[in-house]
Length: 390
Image 1 (cartoon, rainbow, N blue to C red):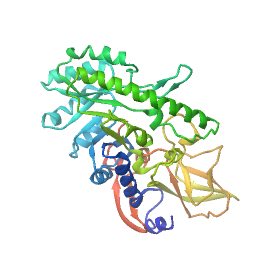
Image 2: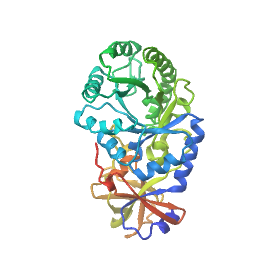
Image 3: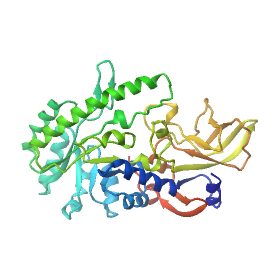
Image 4: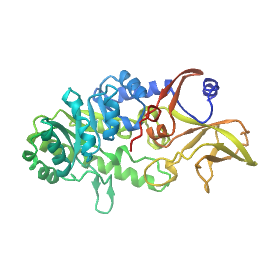
């Protein structure tokens, strides 16, 4: 990180930064690992218009974007983005209607559904505006082992029969067209191989291995069922940064959603054999040494979303042998650290990796880029452009 200190010497702390050489490597590895399948970029994991464009320009098979909210989608539409899949069902009528002019002018936007209520709202809006809205059906491919539910509690379409029941309603919604299917294997992509609690590791490995077979069968069956009723299917979406190797082998999947792999945050270092490099980080200044072996940084509190646990905390990674204090953790405006080697002094810089990817951008207006010890430029985040979404 000596190169980073040189490149960013002129910046006030705290700041967020990105190693563009590491980012380029991660893009290259996504191209290699995707084996020709299309890549849809998960915008929530990037949250910077400039960096989204940077990544897309370097992908071999970029097929579009997966957004997370209507307002974010509008924000991107205003900046010329298209081929957008809203990754989550939307029920805010006014927000959906704001996208109608863009759709009428040719913007490619697809809405996610897994219930009749989602579908009916889209149909009503389409009918009102004399337009046909594109729809993607979200199939829940989580695995219920009876003794443990392995996956996410999101889509209500958990079995082929659930899909059949929903498709029976299709004739009621003529102002929509089903053109996509999503089957996201969260229990593979979103569950680390090396958990903080070590005894859980063999259990997770067992569950993942058993779940893979069941995921494949359920996704194939539901895709076949939907294609029979909806001949206009254009894509089948699956996967995430933590499951590229598995998902790329699924013949029914036409595109992968990738986001976190590009920044490669700390949580993803707990996966096995991912060929990516840490790219994004943030820097804090040491402002206090209250006692021997304790250093306090100004800034912090950047705990990631998800189930509460130490794995959602940021990780100090440079200098080495720095640790969050168990009784304090990352603070609201200051972060105390255990400095085992007693190497920190007031005024020094500490670099941290955020546990998750794009959430870091909610804390900063810019991400400063470097190549080696050369400062390149500042990339505005959503927040830096006035974008504040869910």
